[in-house]
Image (tube, rainbow, N blue to C red; front, side, top):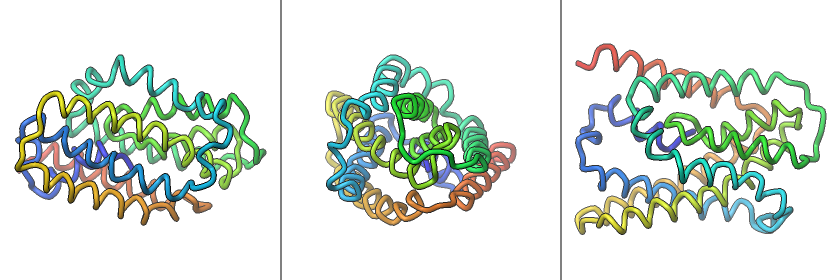
Length: 229
């Protein structure tokens, strides 16, 4: 449901001063979220991580290459409250539309993996969920709901680990203040627990409730952006 989107929207909606923290502090929390969610994904995928590695590479390469080149410009230009809110709404509506497609196949092919890879690259836009984008692409390709859920989970792990490592190296290079270590650890633990709790939703056969949540969250953020007081 987009960790970057929630980091941008939830503090504003609750009146927290997260946006006023130094950039390195915010980056530390992003690293913590990735670090926390990765073990949850690995636990959910035990026994499946090594499945079809040549095809999973197709889900990893697009977000890896595009992320290395465009991640920071995208965050700088599309990281505002209104942009993130609109991304949440559009991504939620896209997931609903994709889930209306007929279920034609249970076995993903190379083009399905590549489509999911480019969908995960779209999640570089704050507010676009990586798993949601992957589910949307897989269902648009005609995969069954169960096959789309399985593929999205398997595709998420290498990208989540890679993004966490990249952000971690950058955060370590910039320096992490000692006072941020405990909050970052708490954030990692919370991310792990929430990821484990969300896994049944990702494996479910309907995602309209999740999509509706994203639309409502985005609409609330849009209202906040128009009336910040």
